[in-house]
Length: 110
Length: 115
Image (cartoon, rainbow over all chains, first blue to last red; front, side):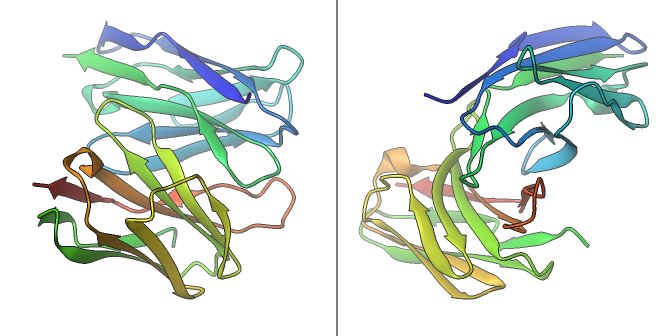
């Protein structure tokens, strides 16, 4: 059965800290790994990763995929209170379905 | 433009009511999705439409009835719902059939309360 596991489930840090969120996956006919940020409403797209070892960056956020170890990390440097959210990792196979992890709830304190 | 719109934003309905949720996208995407999300849980896939045809139904009860009138619109018809169906209903779209191009873009959701 396909599954995606995220860790930690919750995290509390202070502004300026760097955080690393983890995502491991087992997805049949794996094609891509996606990261989303969810605040009050809809998940907003952050990254899609398809190749191992190629880091994707957007401002203070970056992510990388290891297809050998079936693992991805999301890094956030110099965290701000606006980074407080649930971060969702999802694996995609060849069926069009996203297999979501449970999410990591990040709280950034001032 | 990566916008998916959903109406209404909030909906309160009784167990005997019939209502519909609407979703629209103008990104030219040919796959559209309905998800259900309960508090503190990840989204759960309900239905997938690909090229206006239902391609995945995740064993959803028949009180939920999807409809895809055209490539830009997706509806979810609700009838005789139960209180446990209260949740955030998310619509998403993507462009299928292109290698590695399965990024799904989500709408803001409809928060449904069934009394």
